[in-house]
Image 1 (cartoon, rainbow, N blue to C red):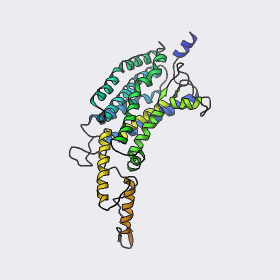
Image 2 (image 1 turned 180 degrees about the vertical axis):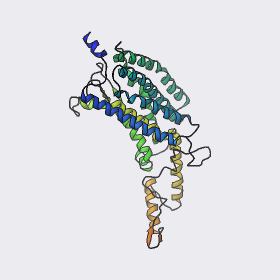
Image 3 (image 1 turned 60 degrees about the vertical axis):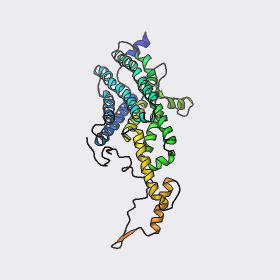
Image 4 (image 1 turned 90 degrees about the vertical axis):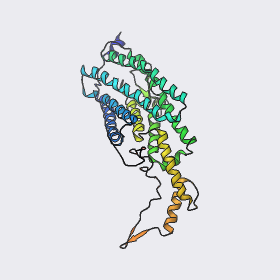
Length: 340
């Protein structure tokens, strides 16, 4: 009985350490999502459903990062209400991942993917109800449902990451290092994906005792990370995972296949022009070789005693403004046309 009463006496952190960690985590999440919302809005195209869904995902997630400013009893119901939008944002992220990964999937795989996303929605309805009961000091069902959040939220995202990495290697014949060198945007995308998985959270059955991510928990058990751990019930790691997930949606707004097709076409066009110079080798290497050859042939403009060099052929990191435009309009194939 005493344990139940302690669990149901829910309010925001009173100790300085817990308050600082929770406030920092919420501020980090809200600030990052606001920046991503601005970037998304400025690059989205009219009539593209995927872009609108990404903007809604960011907005809904942002709302749950402000409850630290309230006090009981407002704190309790405000946290539970904003958690509804956060849960919707999590499910919406899986829908967005499905749309981005759909061109790589067979029809049966695509149907299975979205069907299983829909089938787990009753759990989230239960989770929302349990959240309200818990933070209204009515019932501790939330302590039994919350440990299963990762199981009902993250498998589809992990599959999407693995699917993208597999298709990069098999369909497009890109090496990962080569792709990252040629496309800094894809380097950020893959890095954000891996970071989001690293910070996927899991809970012990004694929640709300210290909750850690899978990887962080392993490091703690093996004494790689030592210390007293986080304050009771405080877990900033899921906010880090959520921000990196949202970053993967905003860094490339269109589906993965469209982005990779543009990059592949750009690569082929560059290699086609390079072939006329009888230069062979890796994509980046031939670019460097062509640059050196141009320099040796005197492809440098001089004027008024000053050397003016304009190099349109060489770049270790190709400017993907021409290959992965976030504002690219496929209808008329005219780059630079944007609309809010």
